[in-house]
Length: 413
Image 1 (tube, rainbow, N blue to C red):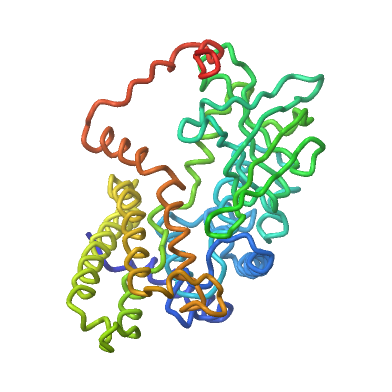
Image 2 (spheres, rainbow, N blue to C red):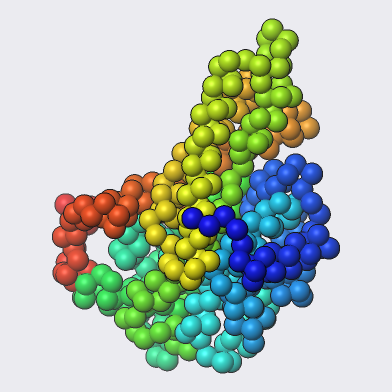
């Protein structure tokens, strides 16, 4: 494991730092999370749009994209380096991840020159947002089981279906859609990819109110939506390959930094007094929990270093990336549980004008469970580790080779 940047990586890090120091306010709290969550408020969206435009003007908005479309053709390790540096500044994070990290790279792989000229520049500058229309109420982890139908209609298609947990659907101008075009072949073979105008007649977006108060997810109802065949991506029946392309472009999981972290907990213990008037940092029970979380945090940090070492050498990350994804959400959950214990009755106050630390810690507590679902549920990640790392037998897939129309449903039982 190599802890040092190569000369080329050090030079890129210096460029990123110079750009961020010149254009991004340094987070007075030491990093991301406190004021920069990827929520869907109008204020945060406006800030994210402005920040995306600044990054685009200086070549940092889409590092992995081809240079002709405003990118740098950056390596995976350079993307991680930039995200680590950006995490130290008080700028919006995550709002354009689906647009820049998944949808447009997929369009670059499958779209025509005219489509790229129309859609790539405004997406790069943050003027148009995209969403990913994959998950459905009955097809989340098993996305190939989706039931949204696209039927031929002259020189186009008619789409009917229901998508859910679509990030920022109500803000998106376009959506990357996977729909079933042939139910009489095995489920993965009957899918086709399209991109759709989210303002088309028949598209209804309903934001989902989350426990945290955010409305960043939505459900999308598609009722007889007309989609030109020119907006099909890839071959008819080739949607599963497009899906894999989109997922392969997803933001590297190793770059995710969640808050509160152990530094926030130490600061809170130092600033907060217990019932006896002594600072909590002097309390043996608090120190024991803080030490336990610190050890787990260091384990994750060093595991991420292994991933970064592989990326630096031009290698694909090994099982360490999956291990980080399996461990980090539970570490965050335990950290916010500890925070609420430290805050006592103050932890129940959500009003930002009255709550300790303006309520961001309470918000983090409500957000934490979602990290165990987004990007792959705990169960899916453990299955991946079991099958690909430990070599254990895979789950049975009884529906793998039979036509989708013959797969039993709950309604048929």
